[in-house]
Structure formats: structure tokens, C-alpha cells
Image 1 (cartoon, one colour):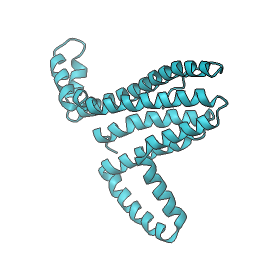
Image 2 (cartoon, one colour):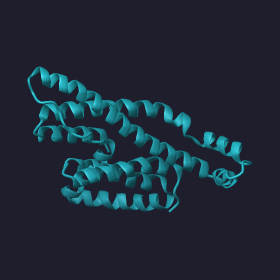
Image 3 (cartoon, rainbow, N blue to C red):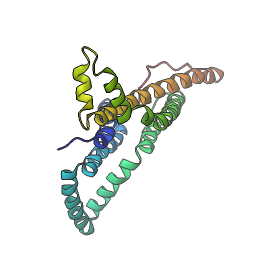
Image 4 (cartoon, rainbow, N blue to C red):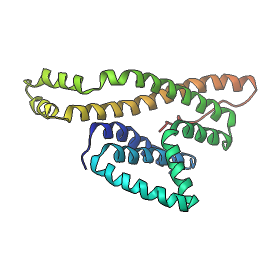
Length: 218
């Protein structure tokens, strides 16, 4: 299978988020299982869409699936659920936070923490979606490669980057990793800020301050 830049752009961040959410699922946050499923479905969808060989197979499978769905409602609902999940990862993350808050012994503290974290995450991801493409792209990677192609110790890397298709793939990988790191950092900052206000709010109600470690978003 040919790994292209569009596939990497989806699969790198979705793969990391899928793994992290599955870890959360294993650690007791059962609602995170749906988020992990959605991220995994996005990977499969991207591979089927952007890889030529896989796309042909996927199209044949889709037609067969549609025929089966006409005969079996369970298959029909499963297919619709998978399609919906890939387009609604953020609502699923919000839902998992609601469930976490509802099942927590410290509902006020958990609610503040989750709300702050999600607000920070969405703000950070929104900013990155506006600007990351301007930084991590084939043109900029090629410029860097050309700038260091005669530098001792970097010639091999530059040669690799200048090979057809490699600069766009490296840009996609770098963009995906940066997006994940930025998302997690934004979540943690929002969560930490919310916890500070939560303690003041709880103190006014005569409640004990929140005492727990930051729970990173995946």
C-alpha cells in the first residue's frame, strides 16, 4: 500500500488519539471506548479514500455492505453508527466528559476540570487549524531542505526530503504530531486554569478543594 501525505495527515493524529483513548478506556473511562472507535474509523476511512488500490476494494466492499444493509437492519445501523462517529469525534469526547462527571464522587470538581479542559482544547485546536497549514507544508519543507543540502551532516536528510513526495509526507507527519501536542497542552492549560477557579468556588460553598492529578486529553 502506498502511504501518501493525505493518509498521513489523517492517520498520524488519529492514530495517536486512538491509542490514548484506548488507554483511558482500559483505565476505567468506559465512555472513551467510543472515542477510540471513532478515531480508528477515521483511519480506516482515510486509507480507503486516499489509497488507490484500497479505494477500489473499499468501493466493492461498500456496495456489498449496502446490499447486506438492505436485508439486515443491524448491519445498516452499525454502518450508520460508524459513519456518524467519524464525523462527530468532538461530541463523543464531550459526552465522555459528561459521563465522567456524572459518575464522579466529586461532581463539582470534575465538572469544572472537564469543562475547562475541553474549552482549552477546542480553542487551541481551532487556532492550530487556522495556522498549521501555513507552517507545515511541502513548500516550506523543500525550502529548508534546499537551504541545508550543502551542510555537512545534513546532506543525507536534505537529499531524502528533496526526493519526490517525501517533503509533503514529512510535513504531514510534523503537522499531525504538532496538532496532538498542541491539543494536549491546550487541554491541560484549560484544565489547570479551571481547577484554580473551582477551588475558589468550592471554598465559597464550604467544600474541600479538588485534589487530583491533571488528566490529559487524548
